Image (cartoon, rainbow, N blue to C red; front, side):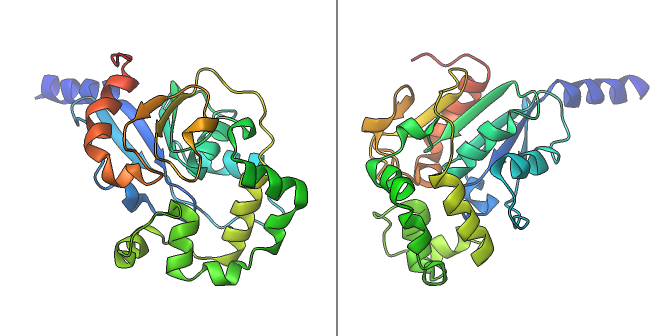
Length: 234
């Protein structure tokens, strides 16, 4: 019996712990179709929290990183969550940082985001109007979202105006200009939020849009274990 318990503990300890961070305003339900083999991986989910007054992205990333309970985890972030996990990696030793439908520095931003920063136009966005589910879906998932608003309403759970105002500002003002070459970037060639033409080095998913975490889950379920274990071949 003792031997069985020891073997079970060894199996648990040998698993790779993977922490997932959703995109802007999204809940962890966006990962409901992502399945990693339970024999080798343990999946954990991080939630957005309402930022403190005047909280910086650095401080917020530290606060979320403090919730990670395992050493040398794999961090996976989608969209704005991809930006956040890169900042979190400054505070913990991560074995891998994987971003999906995101950017590795502000040099990969589309022109509209660069203009929003230089003109401060983002301050003029009526955040109270974005709380409407249709507007929030387009804001978070891209202009090409279809009319399945009930589906998107399920995924977009963070509708606090303080959070939205803060999150938009953190994206626009993200100050990283040097790409961390160790970051693994998975990106769709049809992403309309962060167009692939601006992305410098990534694993390209054919037909992948900004919401490919939802509709390219079969590809991700097949490839993520290989990418995490360094078995993926380009």
